[in-house]
Length: 381
Image 1 (cartoon, rainbow, N blue to C red):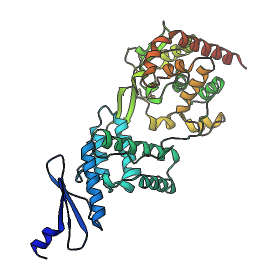
Image 2: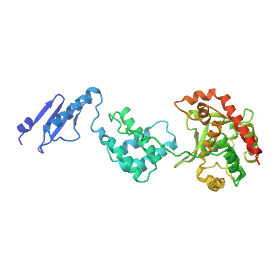
Image 3: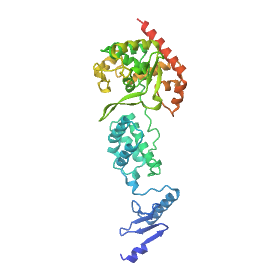
């Protein structure tokens, strides 16, 4: 084919051109807002299809929605790994969880797909494959939420995509079964079956104050205000891969809180302080027999947890269910949802921070209610 023939087959459309290649297919080239010439990512079967593509490119440029084809060729795995590294403010454990979820449930299926080729049907099929491979519904929802967050950054911040392909209704929702909770009498029965007395108040404190495992293990003597009947929560222990046990801030800003506790509870805690806690402000309230912090991985061996919960008729009870128990006990006092959120350190649209300053009287009522329940339980034969 001569140069003259080639020139006749090239047609110019403003800043772009279409030419027919020797294969008979049509190639689109155009100049983007960056001043560089770009090739369409594929060739077209007929000229009309090529003209339609070029018209869409010009419309995207006019709307400010144009993305360079080269950017769309970034692999999802590469973009996602960079996304995790560059997210500011992520806690070490959150980074660890994101990396694990990405490596386990996303990149084996979608990692080699380029950003520009990810579609909603592809995301839908990915979820089906996860379920077929035995991944729990809750974990599928978590993986979907992570993928959606990553791709929202590609849309809103990096402007690499026009739309987020994660648009599957209800895919982000977890429908977990209702977790069990104990009565205060059952909590005390669980305390009684602990083989070492030093762990009995550990159980009661988690339930009465509705604390997370990392929060209760990080409590120190200075966090207990016997006069005000308050426990201060402002830090937690975290298990971080490669770093071991680390002490850091609580889960959210609303997690820093003073929790009112009943006098009857403090009487028991005072006995624990005298028997098991060193007489210095920074001494941990709950430790192993060798004065080391209690770690999640060693908790079962220290306390015989599985045997203990089975003996009171609750096989499969998780330690976190004690926090749920505390919430249920507090709710039975008639406290409002907002008061409960503040007590538990939940942050919903930062509102719990406001309620935290307004709930002292309500929190005291919760503590008094729990104290009455403790007295009633102690009087039962």
